[in-house]
Length: 369
Length: 196
Image (cartoon, rainbow over all chains, first blue to last red; front, side, top):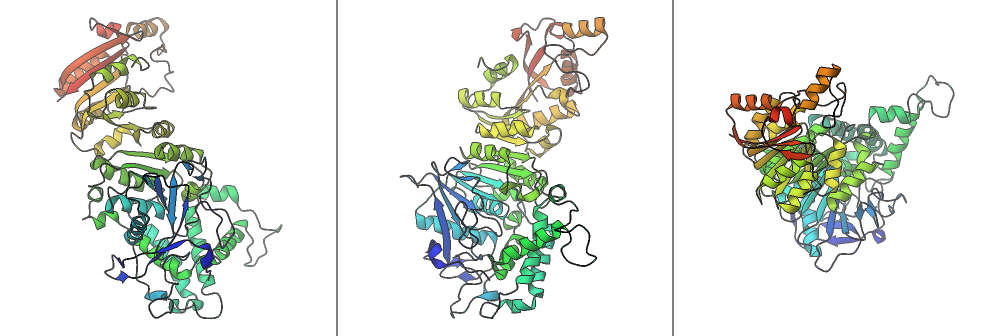
């Protein structure tokens, strides 16, 4: 299990307990966050970036555990499409995660890690925590909320539940509800973790060893496939063999794609907590913005008619396909919200929003303004 | 408004200040931009080409990528004061259905279209025996998006059959407005303002 060094983390503890959708209450909530660029005098240039399932607050800073560049450095920074010379960017680790914000690896009241005693959280709970952070920072209205994938769910939830707290919402490669297929893939991942004997019902933090690395690794491998496209995989790997001329007639990683997935799975375990993976995937599965608002998605946005929206999908994203974005756009049209929508062409599947896509850069820069 | 094509400039002049406007087939958003700046309107766009949508968004315009043939159905009744369909009617799968949608979504509608019966087109077809390629319809038959060529008289017949009210009509040739006399023969483009 990966644990970040506290000295690397900038964090705030919320003054009030957080009331959750489950009916439970989470006390002493800590939110770890990073900021980029200066906040102006009237606090009007703040942009909240919401990270995806396994993302973190290190949008444009070196990751403290992996030493790798921030996950969206190509988009956020001085002179980048989200220009930190102009804007004050805030990104907080979501609750339930494991890079400094309160999650299942954190100590509960009895001093022992929560493990599976951590309450099930929702996307709206994550957003509530972020709004509490904005309150603590004295930021009333954001210039924009921006997010891709699960970050996009938070951005939509933010608009629905806290209308008036942001002037703009940019939701990329996302959906207003998790589909059966989305839930199905997550369940595969969770079952892989829970089937690992080292998971121990979630109480692995104080055991010797590294926790359910094998299960978490398989979960990541399965999920990683859903972030790519068939054409992308074929283009990058095809049926090429890994460091060998012929098939081994065994079960080594003969193919490059196998080797790549195994590496991705293993690397993931050095930076992510298995229980966090369970909780955050659950939060995504529970996400259905229409259900939260009486069954009609337009009603979710009833009070957000003055917010400017931009919704972006990718033609090769089969995890959150364009139809899901159109669903959001139709709801926004129904409440006459100013909405832009574009389906961009990119070869990389769902992960396109994180990768080289000049059209996305132009759309984001233009929309953020 | 001199930078706009003549038919668009005419539409822009007719749109009331402060109206809610939907521009269907908005292209790069030139008309939207003029309406926003000079008529102080709340204007939204619908455009099928993602590269054009991207240009609109980067200009700060609210434009949805979509196919007017199908996506207009998702807009609520009378959700706009004005619906504009410029140079798009003749590309529709069913122009008659699209007119219905236009007049459902907007309280009033502007429709502009190229007139296939203008004399240059007639001469070109009569003397050359081939589908006309002219200044105002410059694309060859096999790559044109205009799948339902229409004339001024055809359009008049359609709206008469539908019982649609004509609030105004304007005609253009050579980039200039011309009178309505013999418009079916003389006009290269027409603009109609319609209501139910």
